[in-house]
Length: 58
View (cartoon, rainbow, N blue to C red):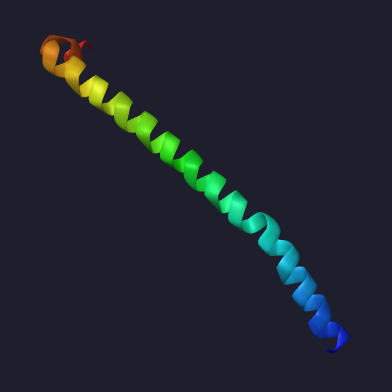
């Protein structure tokens, strides 16, 4: 194996060590944010339905 190929193999192997876990963590964070925003939107919708006059306060 040439030294360039060996260096590329070592580098790609090192990247595989953190890319996968960081992608999983990023995905979980996006999921949490999406669920949080959906919950707040649902609560706001219920609040507006309960008191329609409060939506036009200005």
